[in-house]
Length: 240
Image (cartoon, rainbow, N blue to C red; front, top):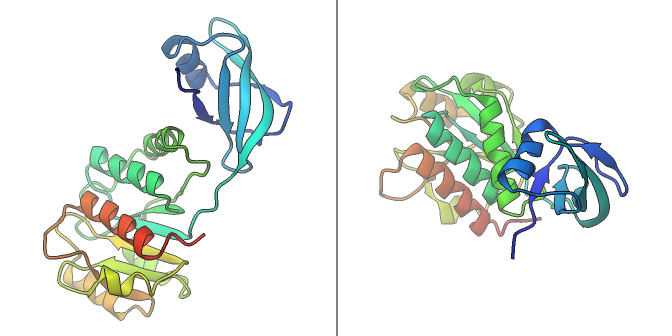
């Protein structure tokens, strides 16, 4: 049995709405999935929820869809941010995908003194997030922030949001610090090579920051990001 395609779209959805899909999505349905008029779809707008839809008409390069009934509303997402220093683009895309699957509310690329891959293709990164959400049954997408220097992030930080920073030099075990850090919260993951001494001092002096230890093993930055989010979701009971 063929799986019904799920697509995130730009318009705010409503029953009976008809509109033409963007060229890339039309190509996916026509050339890749070989769908035709009458085929079932599931459309999402990251605002209202997930809707039943069908292909109303096609041309060689265009697809018009028509909305039916809402299947379910947009899911409630715990207010957890992942603030992660950019690494190699293909590995940072993995971080974005897994953060989307796990249900973070916001991904913030954080520029540090040891960041070597600060220039990321944000459009491509967003596309990875959308694809992950479509494939994993999500009805909500994380917000994707513009890259921000660590010092600026900390200077503008809302003190009501706990900042759990993964400190390779020690810190409290996840089982101790995470249950005491309900939403709003954020996890900060440094670059390959870790935070500099000046950055660690800045973090240790920040009133919202809490040191987090992820165990005795040295983790790559992408592994640390995924592990930390998964631990927070489990230990904080994914509060909704």
